[in-house]
Image (cartoon, rainbow, N blue to C red; front, side):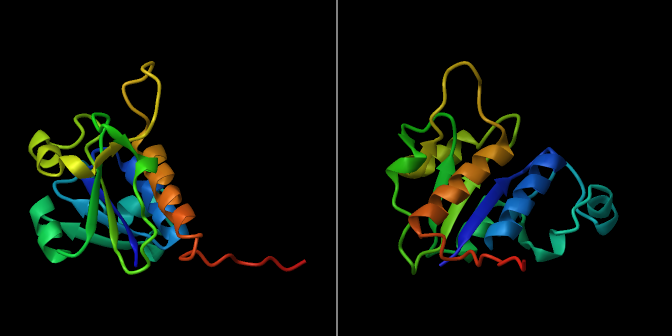
Length: 163
């Protein structure tokens, strides 16, 4: 069982960098659906201080359907401000299941045809109406850690410090 964070055509490199750090720190997989609004070449990553990037399990995909066909047994969930259910309404504790959490572009979210296709698996993060949405990297961290909490944080190996 694994947790997978899927970024649909991300536009802001800092958000993707923060999410990649969360993935590295939680043994989660990162999937980037193209086109990207930035470069992930080594020079750009080093410049952004992403020294943890080699620890991230990252896959690139040309489309959502390419990702979906590669992981037909995966449980896909779509995070969008329009979801009727919230992140806490779902069970992510099955030890044999791969969970894919799909996040949309920072400016426009997920395409309507995608959320309509998977309407039963769309959810939102509870929030007030004072903001349009939460920051993408914060939202990804909330979702990943809720799934980990339900799994008793099993994928995380805690390093012990030496006194």
